[in-house]
Image (cartoon, rainbow, N blue to C red; front, side, top):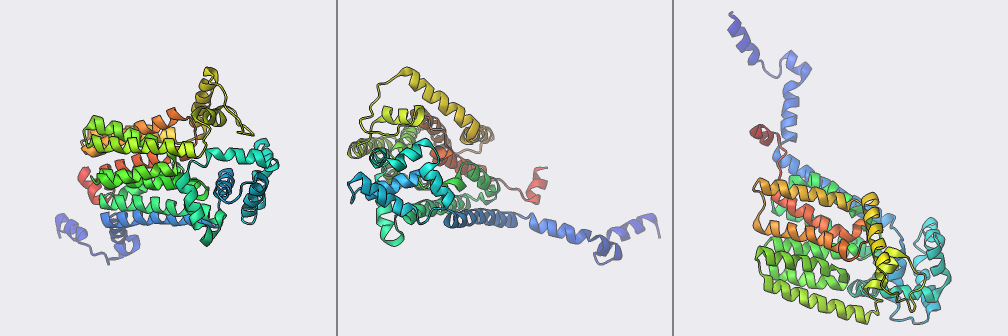
Length: 407
């Protein structure tokens, strides 16, 4: 037998031969091929996202975060039936105490000088609620769910259900865009953007994120009219979402898509914000800025400080320093900007995708510029929108056949 015949016989050796059985090379190769096929990676990516959504929701249901905002929102929900500050204070804590863990309760009542003062002074506690009343749709939903869940549990549900909605909305959008594999990247980025913390903590932030992301995806799909309605609705949950609407208005003008309807949406939303602020007896932008960014106030009764340039600068310096040291949204914003540049250079961005990414980028910066609070939750809707829109334009393929083709 010639050397060539021997080599051909070796190359044709069946997988069942002793060497193949010992090494299992063909079986391993086949298994790797199956596991790295496109459909398999897509299924794993979707399962990964679902497990994160369900796991986060389950944890939030078992161990919710009883934060200070929860106390204030429950008190605000009680204001329509209780006028006396002392009775309002008593009923608020009667709602909080049964579900809060001992450590949480101690922190809420005595964890710092501000909390202790609010625990000991019902009138001053009620004076803080002027900054919470403006979320009128959120407060209305807490009241609507009270007969089913009670006020405390209703406020938890209003973080939990929107968080589930956000997760599955992102999953659905990327499925529609044939970009399920991007969930391997999108899911951890959403967690970094504060998805998990916002699910467990009480506040309107996840609800407004769900409404905003719904509007953004409708705009990306060219379904503008329902998107305008959702944007208008969002300011009743958080009036400061007017920043997102204004950013979209700028993008509509620069990228030349349906400017007039967006202008009407902005004007209607801005008028609604003014009415909400007036009805809620909001102390005004500067007083709220001073309270949140310069020096916290134990009482908002008659609080109307004169504008001071030094305090104004101090508020922004504090916001920048804390955002860069303790928050993730600035780094994520930079990462998304780089991703946009790479995708645009590769010709992967659609015209509407470019417009929305531009709007979300300037909207994030505008949100901070209008009120320099550093927490990730205030920017989640913008960052999550950037992540999902760019992932939908990217549509990566991590399968081995695709990798071999690229090589």
